[in-house]
Image (cartoon, rainbow, N blue to C red; front, side):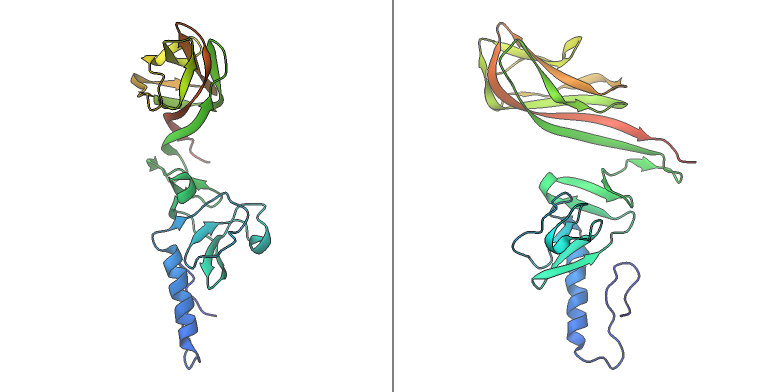
Length: 236
């Protein structure tokens, strides 16, 4: 069947019977692709209920109705799925991670601040994760800020009240324990803005460190967001 170049919308043929079928198929695909919103780019199992127009990205290892369709978009269509390969440069909002993304031909990447024809690029990124505190005087995150990152801030908010014998806590890295904040509160909702006066570059993967002041941690949890800049080298 003849179709358009960019969105692969089916075209009505001369003297075609049941033209409404082709037109409706084109409209359904257009409804899924316009202002592209991906429900997820990592879920490998199709939802039990197919919503017409809802769009998903099919990751490697997908099963059931998505088996063999990895790397494509799956658009809900009349109880089934319409599959289409994304084009390089397409942007999408990924609902389950609340992130903007750019398709580079291989994966959904954070959007670029700037890029060159040979692939050099600048990106501003945010790494968000939750960290639970155990008993002790310090607590180090298992999640690390990636290497070669120019860090502008590491912010945090107490998601579960911090308990223990401490009166406050400091937030930083090993050797600079108060880099992002000192005298921080213990109650749920307490926060640390963590802005640096000047950005600092970490050339190796770096965990973050919480230090109890005036006692020890017993429990609690925080949500962390590392705000940093990265570059990509030009290709040959």
